[in-house]
Length: 387
Image (cartoon, rainbow, N blue to C red; front, top):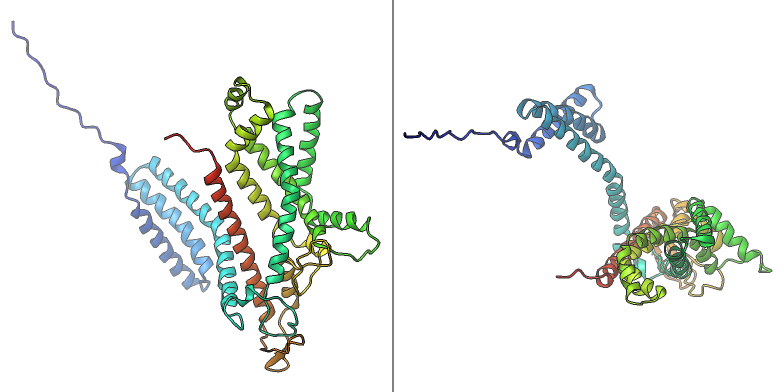
C-alpha cells in the first residue's frame, strides 16, 4: 500500500512592515501643509513666519494622518499622528532655547569681537573711567567677581550638601536618626522653594548684625547668600544619586570587613561620582546667574576686587543689570575721554546694551565650560565597566 504525501504550498503571509511608508513621505506631507498654510494666510492677509509654522504644523498633522490612514491603515495612522505630536512638542520646547542662544551669541559675540582697542579686549579690561557712551570697557572685573563668589559658595555648599545626603541615605534608617532625617528632608524641600531675594536678605542681615557699619558690602556676603540656594539642590541631587548605588556593593564590602565609613568613601561615592558631579554642576549653574541676592550683598564697582572680605565686588549678573538699566547713551559729541588715563574713545549710543549682551554671552561661556569640566570628571573618575 503506497502512501501519498501531500505537499502544501507555503502560505504567503503579508508582513505589516510591508505596508509601512518610507520616512520621506512625512516630509512631503509637511511641505504640503506648509505650502497650503502660506497660501491660506496670504489670501487672508495674515502671513507671518510664526503663523505659517503653526498652521503648517496643524495641516501637517491632518495631511499626514489622512495619507497614512489611506496607505497604511488606522493602526499606523495613529502611530504617525502620535509621532508627529511628539516631534512637535520637542520642537516647541527647543524653540525658546535656540532663539535665546541665537540672540545672545549673535549680539554678544559681535560686541566681544568688535572690542576696542584690540580683539577680545572686552574680556581683559574693566570699566575704570568708562563714562557716557564710550565704546570701550569690559567685564574682567565682573568675571573675576563671579568666579570668586561662586567658588566660595561652592566651598560652603558642596561639603554641607554632600554630608547631609550621606547622612540621609546611609545613617538615617532607624531610631532618632530616622526622625532627624525626616526633619532634615522637610527643611531641604522648604529651602528649595525659597525666593532668591530672601536668601540675599538673610546674607545681608547675618553680616550686618555683627558689623558696626550698616552699609558694608563684601563678596563673602554674596557667597553665603548663594550657598543657601545651592545647598538644597546639592542635597537632593546627591541623595538621589547615592540611593541608586546597589545595596549589593555595600554588603560585599561589609562582608570583607570594610568599615562603613570606608565603604562610603571607596565604594558608594566612587560609584556615584558621575551623578554627584552632574548634580553639583547643576547647583552651580542654578546660582551663577542670580542677580537679586548679589544686588543686596555685594553691590557694584567698576574695577577689579580680588579680596572677598573687603568692600564691594562686581559680578556678571549685576553688571548686566546695570548696563541694561543705563539704556541708550547720550552722545553729546563723537568722542568720549577717559578721566583716569585720558584715552579717547568713540561714542556709541547702544554701547550699554551691547555690553549687557556681551556679558550675558560671557556668562553662558562660563556655564558651558563648567559643564564640560563636569563631563570630563565624570568620564575619568567614574568606575570603568569590565571589558
